[in-house]
Length: 494
Ligand SMILES: Cc1cc2nc3c(=O)[nH]c(=O)nc-3n(C[C@H](O)[C@H](O)[C@H](O)COP(=O)(O)OP(=O)(O)OC[C@H]3O[C@@H](n4cnc5c(N)ncnc54)[C@H](O)[C@@H]3O)c2cc1C
Ligand code: FES
Ligand code: FES
Image 1: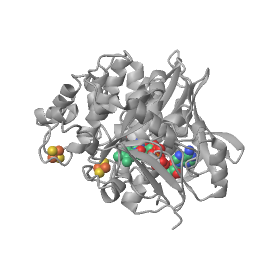
Image 2: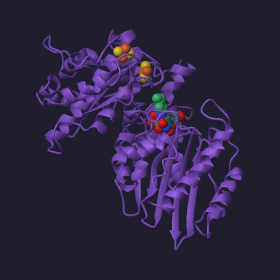
Image 3: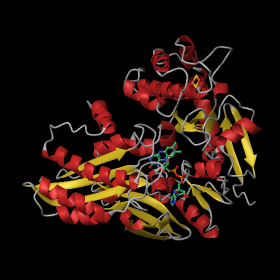
Image 4: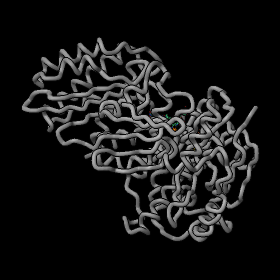
């Protein structure tokens, strides 16, 4: 096989690792356990769901290191190029447990212990990031419950129950004593900068280089966060011949709020883009915290969500309802198209060979419009949507002046509800109009039945979401807790 990724360099704990001619289909977990002998990191599900395989990546961010958790089971080895991978083995130092480990022991946060290394690594990243915020004077070292829940949302434990682990999280955040990593932070940053050279042909840094590589290897697989691709390797046993990692391409990392639009580079992670999106569109920001777990959001990107072209992806319906667009680039040629036009059929897009998504453009929020986003999944956190409905509505004097509606999970592609929109536009915002628009949804979509939901359920829920949107906009004080998941979202906001 042509494993076209000439060299990967990273720090594994404090050791420099140089892998030559590495097979880019190797997962970080299999490298750690099978080649590096780091067997503290466990494999539970091999699909990014349980968090047993959680490791922490450290990357320079100015003069500090930024720590983020990832699922090593679905992260592919090119994704750690130029970074530090921290495993559970690195935490103990001078024969003393790290503060987060001590807190787990003292709070009885472990029973069979299988999930424990993953939990400890999530607590470790939480503590490191809380410490950094407190150093910047943003807040005290203590994280609030929401931050603790978010940090642990991607870790499952079958034995202990979560209270003792949450108690361990709280205890571990009580001390701001320096750990071994802080003591050598500048040295680590310098080591990472030294290895982050430009010689990795398939980890380009410049957008021109990426465009050239894609022309030279038109069948290459573009790797952003790998949270979809990794699953293809571990679950479908797919092997990619040529992999081009996008995470180092500077031109794909822009995140800017311009006068009339927000521009997000295709390799910006959810964790990064969330900071901007939550301020502009609070409903969308809340929904993003339900996309996968923190580990998934630390790696996954909106570009990958679009490029994967799944009909149940969470971002496309929002982008379609907001009339967002993307810039695609092929060689030196760029073209901007509405996100809606990207999708043609199930997993078929208008993206040509050697073309890539460069930037996502999202219109700034408009106070005349109300945006409502409803994600329906079996589990509140870390679950794929059965249906995701987005309504962007402009009412003037009780009449629908403008509306766009898009759904995920209702067709082979993320799709606009054109007939339902027509039934609403120019009509009074009342129950009669809504009933007609609900009927029109039946002509917009013919959903499928699958393990997530039946076709009937999907249609009923889509119509009920339109009803919910109507009630919420008509009576803003009314708490429409018709769906338990949404009720929880409301509770969290309170
Ligand atoms: C446990 C788990 C939970 C998840 N939960 C959710 C969820 O709740 N909601 C949801 O929507 N998704 C979910 N996902 C799916 C996945 O996390 C998202 O689709 C994510 O946005 C993919 O981004 P990525 O950067 O990891 O993409 P990658 O895996 O790197 O790439 C995905 C696809 O996009 C292509 N691609 C990447 N970048 C570009 C580009 N710039 N131009 C063209 N093509 C490109 C790749 O070649 C590949 O085909 C989940 C996945 C896991 C494992
Ligand atoms: S082994 Fe379960 S998330 Fe990786
Ligand atoms: S302690 Fe057994 S799975 Fe968590």
